[in-house]
Amino acid sequence: MYHGIDFSGAARPAADIWIASARPTDDGLRIERCASAGERFGVTDRAAVLTALRTWLVERDGVAGLDFSFGLPRVLVPRDARGSWSSFLRWFAAAFADSDGKAMQTDLKERARASDSDGVELKRETDGPTGASSPYSFITRYQTLHGVRDVLAPLVLGDRVGVEPMAPTESGPTLCEIYPAATLRALGLPDERYKGGTHENERPRRKEIVAGLRAWGVTMDDGLADRLIAETGGDALDSVVGTVAVARAVANGFQPESARYDPLEGCIYA
Image 1: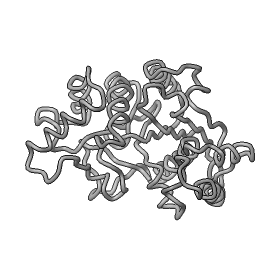
Image 2 (image 1 turned 120 degrees about the horizontal axis):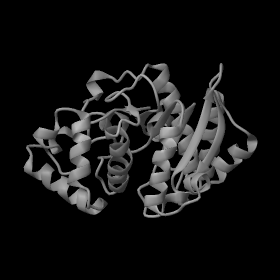
Image 3 (image 1 turned 180 degrees about the vertical axis):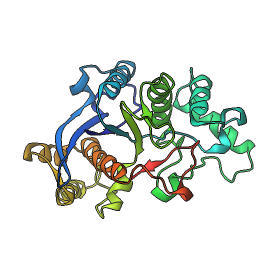
């Protein structure tokens, strides 16, 4: 099974985190379920949702893609934590154990200013080519904090999952980083102004995306297609796009492009 998870670091993310599950077919993917974290787990607050999500990930078969940054720009990580990606996770979880997203962002901006880098909101090697934001920007800071500290670190350091390509496993659940907008671009589909409820052309764009996914090989019930088009936030749609990103990564053997990948920073699969 392939799972796409549209992640959120909101305080009450039950309606913002969406999970789509798909089964590979001869022609592509069959979406078997797409639901919010609230519908899946029956809880609302961040701690409860993320606890349930961790348990769910460990119990899954196959590969799950999550759309938050799995790392930071190398220059921001202390030298003694650069030995491996697991060392980075251990440092991150300890350094920001009591931080919120804003405090983490402030700390990382100060680290950037103290480095020889140009700018304060730095990007990873994988971010620029895929069009992703800095992992600690205004848009991404809470996703990165809670994704790395509260999801990845406990699972990876506890040997509960493998992560491609930094910490692969021969058996058990596998996680990878995805970015739905990059996948949409790769498929030639609209990658902006299709969510948020602020533009009059968003619904037609969601409809176009659903049609494009079906043309690519994604099979879904008409009821789910209607829901993906109707959901203004685009989170449900992004989770389905995430299953395509996972399928493409699996088909490519999770091979990253060397020029776009630093094993300390992570790799976006589109």
